[in-house]
Image (cartoon, rainbow, N blue to C red; front, side, top):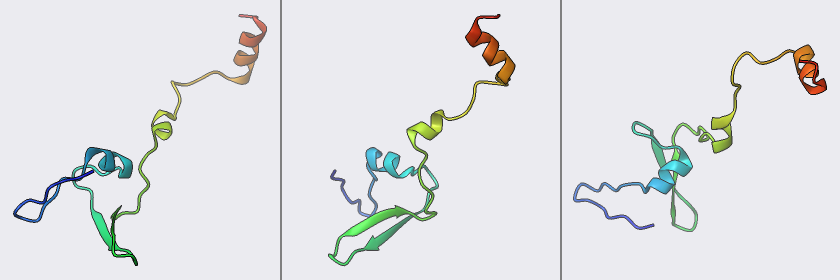
Length: 77
């Protein structure tokens, strides 16, 4: 991915990278130089981005108790 540096030294982080790192407006980022001279961009808060599976996690309401589930599986309802 290539981006252009503005006259002020600013660049736009590509959308795919923002999504990968979970960067949203107001996020802080760090730049680190590695031993081989390349630069790595990381989130400053070290928070792991929410995975697509974590976003789906939860429940749809109060749910059923064990007796109700057993009644449904036996066809007693």
